[in-house]
Length: 485
Image 1 (cartoon, one colour):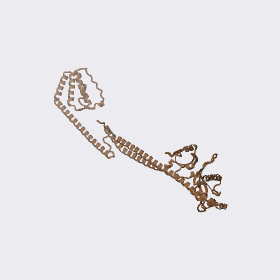
Image 2 (cartoon, rainbow, N blue to C red; image 1 turned 90 degrees about the vertical axis):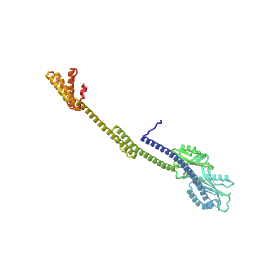
Image 3 (spheres, rainbow, N blue to C red; image 1 turned 60 degrees about the horizontal axis):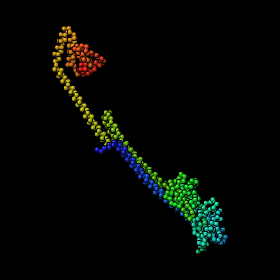
Image 4 (cartoon, rainbow, N blue to C red; image 1 turned 180 degrees about the horizontal axis):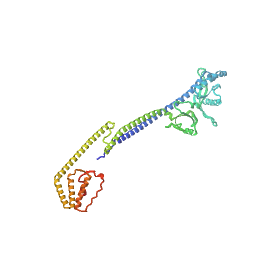
């Protein structure tokens, strides 16, 4: 026969609570994986948006440079300076050109110096130093582009071999003569704008992300970092796979975990790496994750609290009922305390009614037992009385008295004492009540001993040690005499 398992309500409640806990853990794990996937998708979306903003802002900056130089190059005063052979024209138009250059530098802060040389030997330069170096570079570019016209492009000016300077980023462009209709492509001025890498690095490509760092590479060498960096951080930056697209674009500098985006300027042998703290990319998902986690924790807490209340609401009355049943079994209590729960209250009332029925039956049984005892006792008393009535006490006592008188006249004291004791024995046995004092019972024993001592002299000895206070103690008659016998 298969074994059956019996569980108490408390054990069932504990099992239910364990199942609820397992359910909450499963839900929490599912929620965690959901939040993880959501965070990953949100991170990828933020990274893609961040990368697009970097590319768009960089294109905007470079387009701004092109628009500024175009606006300056085809400014009427600049055209007069570049394509007029009269020296006086330079003096008359230089002030307006300088004012326009100052405005353009304010519009596009990455522009540092601007140089334009005309085919007639005129040169416009917005700076105060380095004119000779930039002019030589411009002449070299012009000679390399001959005989075809030069096309606008960004280029890199390499430093001298023994120089400690960094490579210089420049934008080179042709300027055609618009003073007369139908310009000749072979007659053009050559312009060059130097780009300030420091200003380019300090531009905020993504204002919503805090802690952004920009790093400029030239031929895999770090040439500029937008913030101070230790040697270990520079070494870590040199290990970046600039020519590849890694699966995990993560880099740790110091105590901060960064996600980076790389823009390769292949024509310039330069790369721009923009690093942003990963935590900044996860700000939006972190808020949603925190809100979802808070909701989950509150839900779990409410569920746990309600389960605890249910457990307590059921276990306390059940425990009280068990305690009451133990007290009833021990005889210290006669009924169960009624709990507040309707179902348990009905059970307790049913048990109390059953206990009352049992108690009533017990009382009736005791009453019947007492009645039966009294009836049996009365029957025995009647039988005993009938036995006593069968003997004529009067005849017996008269005979014994006559015999005692004869013994007295015959002067036989022994026989007289024996007859006196024997008469006392018969009189006590026939006329004594059911319950007598101890004194009467002892007198009866003494009379019996006197008779037995005459029959067998000096064979028995009777010693009595009784407290005087005990002589009046009630007891059943005819009890001690059989013991002495």
